[in-house]
Length: 286
Image (cartoon, rainbow, N blue to C red; front, side, top):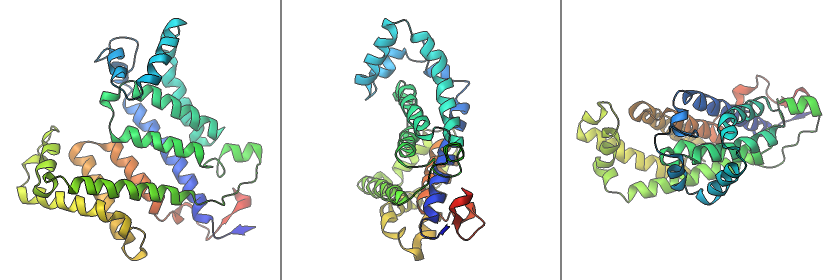
């Protein structure tokens, strides 16, 4: 039996689960050499207690670490938390016990990364949201070990992709408003400060180029929800937003953040037909 209407929804769920898992695994692997300086029982850059004290999750983290200390489990937690986090991401990647894996990965991601929140940035927040969506969306319904093992009937009646579209449009719209209210984005000053904070030479660009990039960023983000839903302008706004994030990756060295934002844009509004060479997805094959 073939379904035409929900084909893109299935591809979205498959794409989102795979990409979230892969991006998270690559990011944690890239931190392997330095992670002990941020998350360990001792020898961190800033004393661990001071780091999670500054976290907005302090009221959750403090009782948790007190519990570990009271039962002498702190050393075990630091020794195995990263391993369990990676294992849960691998389970999520292959779609094994998918919801449980997403839940464990989400909890551990919050505990691990919010324990050194002064070093968190946009990527960490979007990864938290991505894992949450993997928990609430039926991302394990297709091309997963769950599907092979448990032989459940996969149904995709809801518009999960629409949720991500609304979320992304809201983020860009209000980000555009916030930037538009800051004069630094109109005269290039905010962009120059961001570039000057990184150890490269991009801040030497002529001021008029900084102004063009700054104004362009404001206009792209503000107009995103108005243009991305129209088929005529969607490819142009998506191309612009991807170029913007690629530039952020190169000029500000924010590779993980740019990658997850590009992934969100492709998942929400991109053409995912390349995931299947068939015109329609045959439910029996998945």
